[in-house]
Image 1 (cartoon, rainbow, N blue to C red):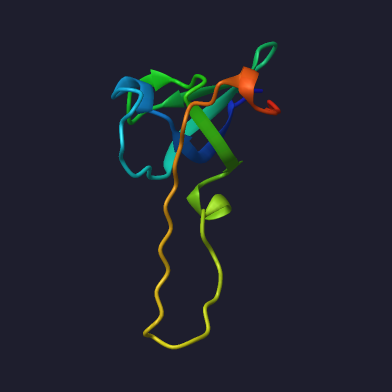
Image 2 (cartoon, rainbow, N blue to C red):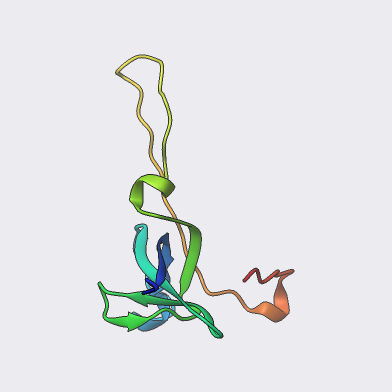
Length: 105
């Protein structure tokens, strides 16, 4: 019996501020990568867009079988066509000694 690896699609954000200078000012977009389960090791992430292993710069919002499982914004809108929605995400590196941070793995 051949076993296929367990894998999943992951959606979140990729912090790149320290790569562009601490004071880099730019709008952050959502980002996606994949994770594969390695028996005895656990879930390991890989970002094919940047050809890199997932590390502390990746902020995971959710995971699923594919994009449709974890669409970042999903719902039904009722109202006039003159209304608009604007969303901005600011991803910053915090000094853990100066905040009440909880790490969730």
